[in-house]
Amino acid sequence: MKYPIRNAAAIDVDDTLLINGEANDDLVEWIKRKKEEGTELVLWSARGRAYAQEVAEKLKVSHLFDAIISKPSVIVDDKGWGWIKWTRVIQI
Image (tube, rainbow, N blue to C red; front, top):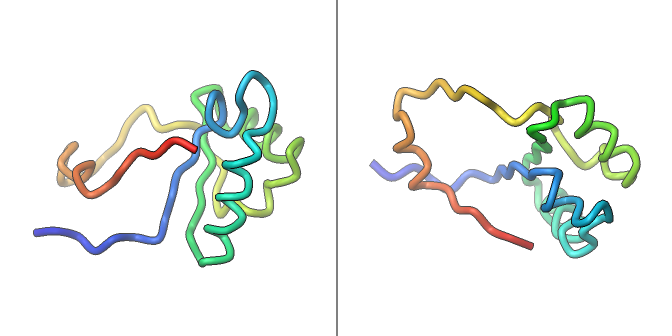
């Protein structure tokens, strides 16, 4: 069974939203467009929620995110890793 495409995206901080400590302006613009389109946006970082929140506030983009969290170390899902085939990884 194929799932419908969800209007949700998870964005990482280091080397994604930030590159060499600076804002990835192309990604920030993409995030703004996605928010305008109604996309649910999650910001996450392996460094933890507080760090992700600090970066979002520094870049003045925290208001664009529906959630700011630590990058998950555990995912509980009845599909195991099978759900990943209905997602895609992009670089901006």
